[in-house]
Length: 301
Image (cartoon, rainbow, N blue to C red; front, side):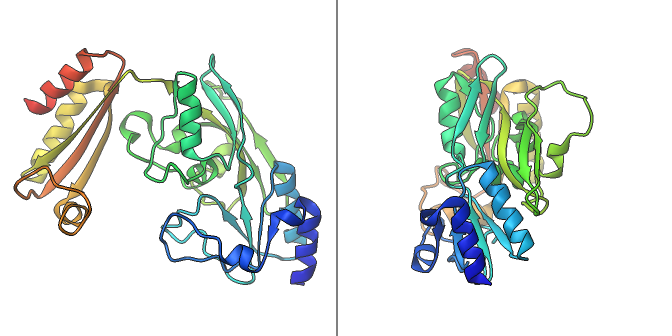
């Protein structure tokens, strides 16, 4: 049974893109999540058509498939057993188009977030979602997990940046809804069946992302708060006085802050005393000079 499916997969993607034995088990990632690859094979398609053929064959042979993205794997979403096939998106890594007029990006699911950010930046545009795993996480995984990141106050979750997508169902059926328009009320919005569902309903292969105008200013502050009421007051003040330029407000409790700062952690605390709460306040705007002064006045006042 296992030999049959391996042979079929090699017929779809070629021998070099079906990894077995130590070629699969010894693959490592930069994220120390202590979850080695136990799958019988890692298969690496390079097109939606190949993904569809793989899923159709696995469906017909009752073969389980685990999607492999950037392998951050902090929630064990990539855990495999010796009975599984791991389907890697690493070769689905093309940015197909950046429309500088419509402010959209069409990309395959294996493009990393950092690559998407850099490609948008090169066109004086801005990829609005950002998380710490940007260098390894992939757009397909970002959409499948509805990634939030640090700028949700202004730009929303990943769902808010997806205009259209293409996905492959368990039986190999391709569902394509590659909408490129912000204003579109033409019927069922199929993309929402796949965003945030962790690959349960289908494997995302291509995505249309809504980009934003590139900000000209970027201000960040670390604020210490004496109590929760003060924390909320600072948030409301920032919303009122910074307006739409406010893009991030990330809260840290004291125990977390102590974990990441010295002597326990790697970072040096800029504060001489301990506080119950801390917040990272982030703003991005288009008025150099004015935005900087306003940000300092709002948080320093």
